Structure formats: structure tokens, C-alpha cells
Image (cartoon, rainbow, N blue to C red; front, side, top):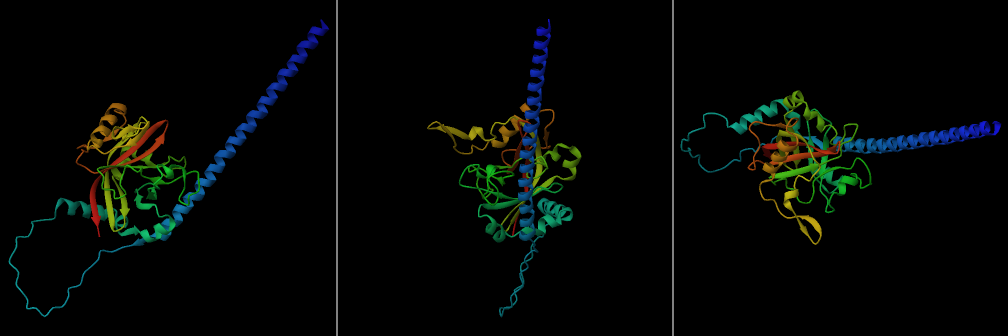
Length: 305
């Protein structure tokens, strides 16, 4: 009997030791994972600070150019009378309305000479009122390079906002996608989710993209949470065992809206009237919860100096 009791006691001690070891391993693993997350956050904060410093250096206030009249020896010629328009155009009224609320976004612009000294792949800059999205946009010859690399070409988070090689850096394609990480602290495209809130959309209906000598104003027309399939998958073909971009067929916006209505009918926002294939669409895309979160804007003003 005593031997049986001793055996049970030994087995109990063994179980306790195993549980203790497992507990220690779990604590070490948890601590290691926490340390890894902390390291990632420190790195992300460092690169976020670099973006903020770049903005401080690169943004300058601009004013519309004014051309002085040149003196001439030619006799004055009385011009033929013309019929003046009865009022401002719809575009002029829209510009005036946007300028009244977002004057700083139109007059304070990035100096691309300074941006290019930081990284020659910068071809545009995006700013979204009401968010901390205020970043350069890049394009590399290496596909998805800036998904994994930072502005200084170091590898890791948060990466950069970028477009893939299927899109043109002129931003004149009818359908363009800018990608960025969904950072937990809201940086990069982490604050796009704000557009899921109706009140936020209504009070922040526009975002701005800058190129040298150019400001593009986009109105938010679609907000959705889609399956992770590539938004341009219909424009890719299989060649030599690889999927490569072929060409736009002009129906990208229609297919995008079809996916929105099929995959996200209850929670999606689509403007009235909805965008069409005749519009110039800019999609801001990030990942979250195993899906693709998108905010799409329609180009409503293209202001060139």
C-alpha cells in the first residue's frame, strides 16, 4: 500500500514539475513576443518621426503666380466686345468651397526637390484631413519593395505608401491603387478606418494628392471591407507560370463596385451618384482582419500651376 501511495506521490510531483516548466516556457514566450512587438513599435515610431521631420523640411507656402503687364510701344487696340459668362463655372464654385475650408491644403505644398534628396522614388505626396495620413508616395522598379522597406531603405515596418508597377507615376490612370500598412497606432493607413464612420465621412469628404506643380483633390465615394483578392486581378494574365499585369480594360471601377455590392453590401458606403468607369478613381488600400480595407476617391479637381 505504501508503495502505491509513494508512486502516486511521485507522479504528482512529476506532473507539477511539467506544469511548472510549461508555465515558465509560456511566460518566456509571452515575454519574448511582447519584446518583439515592443521592438517593432520602437522601429515604427522611429520611422514615423522621420516622416514628420521630412514634412517639416519639405512643405512650403505657395501663392498663385501673378504676371505683370509688359510695356509696349504698339498703339492700344480696342478689343471687340465679348459676351461674358453670367457666373462662375461649377468647377470654380467647387474650388472656392474647398479653398474656404481647406486653404492650407491648397497653398502649403511639398517641395519635391527636398523630397527627392530623401528618396528619389518619391513621386507624389498624400494628405488626408482629420487623420495622421500625411506621407510621401513612392514607386520602385522592384514590385512591392516598399511593402517591406522604409524610406531610408532599411527593412521592416512601417514601410511606405506606394503604388505597384501596373500603375503610372503620372497618376493619370483611370484606376490607381495606393497601398500602405495598417499600423496599430494609426500611422500609415491605420487611420483609414475612420471613414467607416458616417459623421467622419460627411465632415471630411476630400483628400489631397500633390505632385510637382500640381494638386489633385479627390472626393471619397466608396468605403468597403473586401476579400483579400487583388483589386486588379482581372487585368493580369498567366505567362510562363507567372501572373503578370497585361493592360487596363477600362472596366476596373465597375468591377470594383460589383465586388463591393457582393462582398460588403451591409457595411459599405457608396456615394450617390456612384462613380463610373468614366471617372478617375484613387483607391487607398490596407489590410485588416484578413480582409482588404479600401477608401476610394473620385478626382474632382486637378489644379496645375
